[in-house]
Length: 70
Image (cartoon, rainbow, N blue to C red; front, side, top):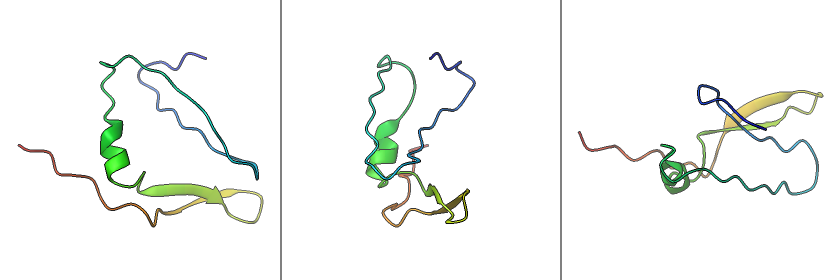
């Protein structure tokens, strides 16, 4: 599936089994995934709300994003 450049993409595990996936992008695509990895993941997690829907909660492993030099 092609995702146009102006759209954000996310993957959500809706099952009980581990969700494993692989994405490949050109090295010059512009994403800084190291920033996210160094921060312990995204600041918010999307989780099951227990009532058939979804909610967000803070990621307990998230340590904050590094400040870029000006």
